Image: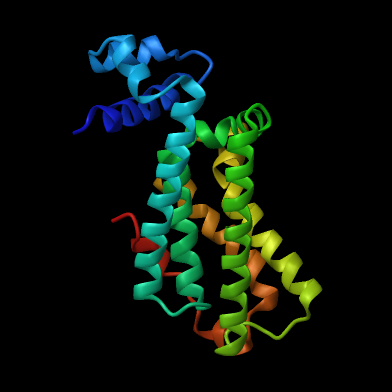
Length: 210
């Protein structure tokens, strides 16, 4: 593995365990077994490392989402549930970022710009999913205002389910992450067509972590 990749992966591990404030570039260099000067050859500072991690996060999420698109029909409840589970696994993989999201982006204008771009892309993806669901008859027709509120509700649950579990004192595990799909179904239910509701049993999600 290249030194740059080692720095990124080690930083993710340390940030997840201790938080970004408690971890310095020296800590990261020591954990890898390189000199601080070697680390600074690849990254100017800790903020630079966090930005590089965010790039990896984007690439990882896109790769995983493409796998879902290749397997499930866009706009289907299966695709939405599998996407939700993927997002929760993604959030746990980079949990330091979710835990410190507001502080990280407010203290780094470049990271803030990157995050807002990704956030808007995710909302566009959800709106596209809704349009596909309307087109294939799995989601009821709605106007643009309703679509916007529906997309916001879906994204809120997906984006902050991990945070909700942790601030509520619940252990984050397969069961509690999976339970978020029950909440997602509650959000989806008023917008699903009668046929989809009749055929939707919720059993598919039970096998995702097995």
